Amino acid sequence: MKFEVAKLSLDHRKLNQSFYLQPTLKVARELLGKIIVRQLDGKILAGRIVETEAYVGENDPACHAYGGMTPRNKIMYLPGGHAYVYFTYGMHYCFNVVTEKEGFPAAVLIRAVEPIEGIEIMKKFRNTDDIYNLTNGPAKFCQAFKIDKSLNGVSLLGDEIFIIDPGIEMQFKIGRSQRIGISVGTDKKWRFFIQGNPFVSKVKIKPRIKNVK
DNA sequence: CCCTCGATAATCT
DNA sequence: GATTATCGAGGGT
Image (cartoon, rainbow, N blue to C red; front, side, top):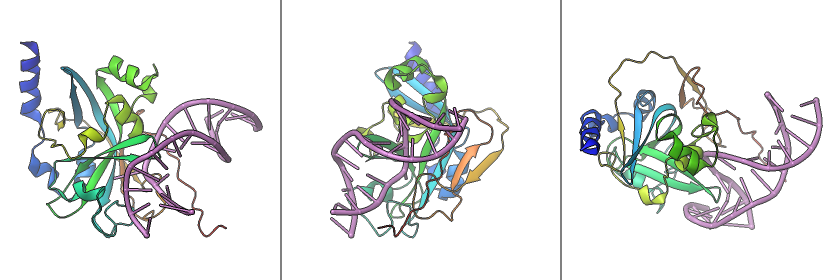
């Protein structure tokens, strides 16, 4: 049947665990151009990853694992190749790819993708027809792909959500900047994106206000 | 186009 | 009690 053929093809190109066990900054860069696939009720949603951010270990003050393990961040301590999904600002989800070996808490935040398949479904989930506003932000991507905490901790080698190599050479320049929306760790340029791609998020560097009474 | 601000609740201290 | 790896509405330019 049609669905099985598609599934076999996707399995063939699925990134394996050794990819995710690599250093987080490398994974963050190499995820650019890869295709993230969500299977939902027999339907496929897919998009090209165009923007990522790295969060690396207990010494990175912007990483959720800064200061050690908590109930929320324990998924980051799993071996690379798991999904880490968290809830923030009282209404949004963010999706991360866990990286590196078991016990080392690190992950890559998927900040934006370019819609490829299932675009009409994404428009419904996002309640907009503007294709440039579907997936150009970490919480927008989650809403478009129906990602919530039920995916927290699932394996990226499974069928619910995974990443594949498109198998064709794509030429692009990688841009980098400090990470977005954080108040610490702003000295690290650990945000990566495909330069010139129109589906990259609109950047607003958060103004630093500290010690204000 | 731009910028400011409010929403809204899990999470951690 | 404070903060938050965000987004969209609203109003000004």
